[in-house]
Length: 89
Image 1 (tube, rainbow, N blue to C red):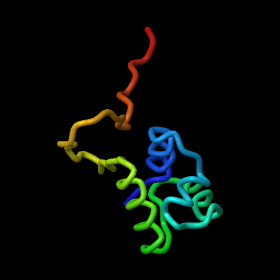
Image 2 (tube, rainbow, N blue to C red; image 1 turned 90 degrees about the vertical axis):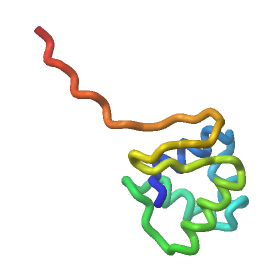
Image 3 (cartoon, one colour; image 1 turned 60 degrees about the vertical axis):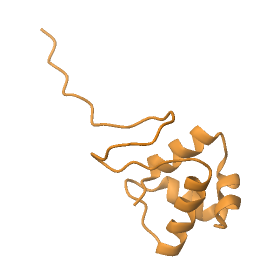
């Protein structure tokens, strides 16, 4: 599974636009746009999702699932739930 936020973050790390991701994955630009505009986990045809994930991985992206350990080297970012803020006194 991949989330729309992961897709956008992966493109940002690679420095590519949606059109380039479409070309690398063999998926249409409108499909990439729809995937990135969705909320949460991207839903769609499994073959299409697989193509996008494989293209990102081939380009050097490691997708990390919730609570999973990243054992590979390299730089990256990880989104976590923000800590609850204490009320102001």
